[in-house]
Length: 355
Image 1 (cartoon, rainbow, N blue to C red):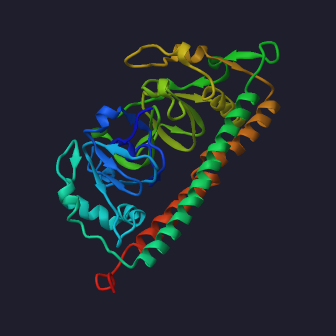
Image 2: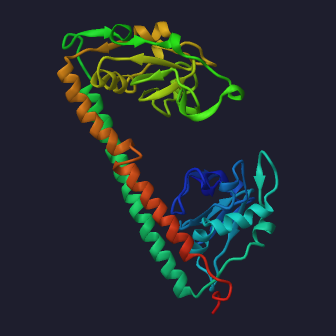
Image 3: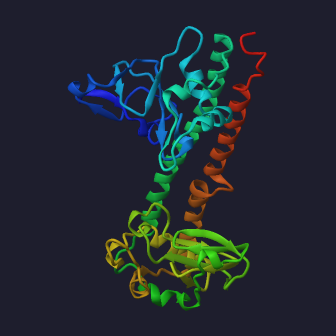
């Protein structure tokens, strides 16, 4: 498989604060020309397009020696400072403010190893460092457990969604989306950013809210479906999403109106669960035009059955997606709690350090 290798970009996109295994490997020949990372070393990023990612740290805990290339600095803990204590310190606001002073570049931000070394680090006793690391590790473990549970719940949700929305051709009536919903695309009005009057009304595009404006053209409950954009293929966010209340919608999202909540949500769940590739045109600029949208075949069980299915899926959706309840909300609160105590524990008055 080769020699374990830590690429600087993977520190802020793949790893957490520590890792026992690497994502990448290089040949033994290439490894000879790269810098060596021993167990317990901290690898710090020097470069990124985002300043927040510069200075991110990874404690390497693998038994096999690893290597790293350019754009990363290796910090070797000593008898006075723990590697993980230092790695936690690189996450706090104080460190972020300090590295900002030395940042160079516009599109690509860089803080050199020389400049990074100028940032002062509070070094309390090893006993205090150990206790800080223990407390923060406990906070991180709780968040990790909740995140693992959320991943499991999402898999469970996807399983039940697919089961509940799978129908044989003869089992229920099927209709086109054009038969089930009223299309209100003709009422949409795009406004360029320079002409929008700021306000509190959400202004929707293909993937959600893109701005807030003063006026509205819709008032009620609607289903928006992405009309164009890479997300039609990538599906990184739902392409169908419900909106309520006053709103303004541009010409990048179809607007559909249904008679009942259950019918709207049923179609929303169904569209987000199926492959829409056969209905999408264009390669460079994917597009789901109104004609193709209206032709999508949708299962049409009784209203009572739709209400039952929507009731089950709403509960799963709230548990796995809601930002006001369920696991995402709990994770957000735990993360804020962790960040608060992390910054408190790692902030020392100058006179305290070394006392």
